[in-house]
Amino acid sequence: MAKGLGTIVTVLLVASFATFALGAIAGTSPGAVALGSDATPEAIAAFDHNVGYDRPMVVRYLDWLGSALTGDLGTSWFSGISVTDSLADRLPVSLSLAGLALVLAVLIGAAGGILAGRYRGTAVDRGITIVAGALSTLPPFVAGIALIVVFSVGLGALPSGGYVPLSSGVGPWLGFLVLPAVALSLDAACEIARQLRTGIVAALDENYVTGAVVRGLTARRILFGHVLRNAAGPALAVVGLHIPRLIGGAVVTEAVFVLPGIGELARDSALQGDVPVVQGILLVVLALVMVSNTAVNIVLERLRPHSARSGS
Image (cartoon, rainbow, N blue to C red; front, side, top):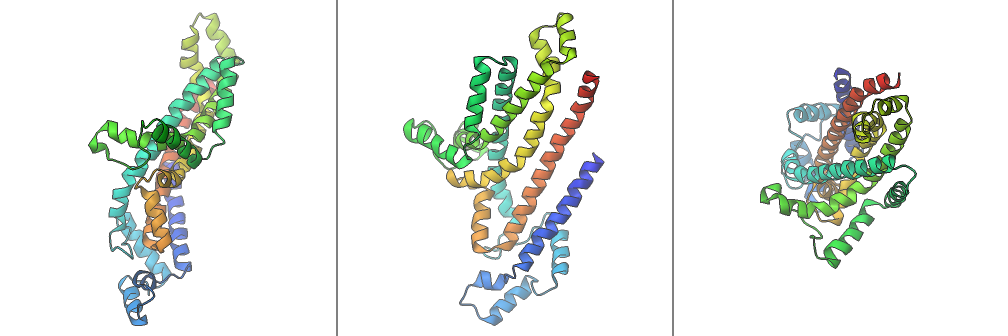
């Protein structure tokens, strides 16, 4: 746990400096960006002085880092709105999308992997393998457009875009999120199903399974009480690998479904050259990825001793 926290802190420090340095190396003057081409050199210089841009980069980085540790990520050069407040408005949308996509990926992938592994070599196994292989090739935005055509335009069952907060009701909230979440989850679900199927097939040939059969345990108890726990390691590792993709893929998916998340904020800020907002988004997203991966690694560590004992 302590090692994981140390890794998170080290990576965040390095990444925060790299992110800040990229903005500084770009040489973008806040005054020139915010005031436009009609601004006088004096006005630009005054603006840069007010935001502290005329100080050395290292000094500005240390000030920014110190403020970030207290939750202050700076202020937008254009709107003058706090970056922290902007993220607080947009982050629930993106977390809702990525979180629901992760839940769907785990549920769909686990169901497919268990069925394919349990009925290995049968039509069920082959069917799941073929479907998983085909769906995994679809980029999220292509899957999203296909889902809109079928469920929104064709059937009229679900909205094609927009978002309502959870406070408006679970039903409306899910109605707006389910299509983008499904589109975003397909790749991860297919990979989880494949890895879990492979793990189950390998585990079913282990000696402890033969021993459990001899002791008279039911097939369901052997599968869910012994095989699944030992076979889940690679699938859980896949979950860890796909968390950054789910968060990063949400940027494109939000654009397809017109979701007002941090993806839209990042796109608009990057196009405007609003460096403080882009830096804040990168830092928060990186922190989310690091924390999520650490949680997955902790779960994997808890599973490994059991696997070792079972295999010995």
